[in-house]
Length: 86
Image (cartoon, rainbow, N blue to C red; front, side, top):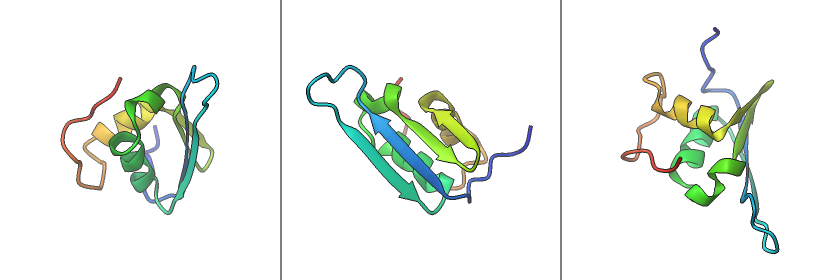
């Protein structure tokens, strides 16, 4: 498997699944996938976890995959404490 490129630009899309009348959708673009991953794990409310995905190049990752990259030893940014969420 090819190592993940944390330097590639990335986008985060997040939505609350099941938030019927007050659906919240968040979109953010980042200069690096590392910054996008850090935002998704450290800044987004756990309410968004199920509906969060990241696009970087040809890859589209769900929250579990984002979290796995954040926890990986190769993650290049400092982490802000233990990982919360599902």
